[in-house]
Length: 249
Image (cartoon, rainbow, N blue to C red; front, side, top):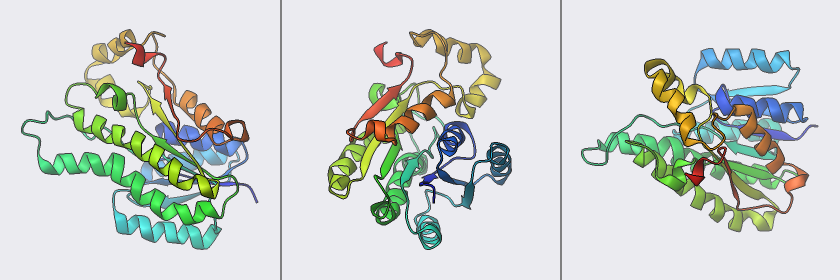
């Protein structure tokens, strides 16, 4: 049977691009999401490319839903070879002064708790895989502390960097490699509201990138494809920045 990968938040954006890349590389792809309209569209795209897949609807911030669905995946497939913790998001903007506690906890849950919940349940399945890998998503914000109002998002993404390295140390004895990607400004639905509401601001994003363009989801997916492959067999605990040199500025 093909190697099996699970990608969270994979019904659009970088997650779906990664599902396509790994599917084309021969993986059986398990995608996760919570938007059924997006899921239907994602399934159609994967089918059009003759990619073999399965879909699980669950909220990665909900511990019980994660446990229940990961148990179902384990019962059905018996193992995983790759886990891509892609699910995450800005969750809105707020300064720390006056930040509502529920906002703080929601952003941390989406970007940090989700990685912990899914990875914890996936580890026994990855132990049964062959040359298994975990890929976590940080962000350029994990280094530069984010833009206005994105401080708690940046805090969560910074924590993902440390979590990735900690997991790499803990799991290396099981031959499970753990690496991460830290995308900069990528032209995905993540920035859709800015693109619609403030197109001038959206275009200005390019000025903060030495390459003077936004990244594409496929360019992040190709790095993930490399990281889970045998070509990266001596890499673990690394975070690859995919940002067109954005971190230089």
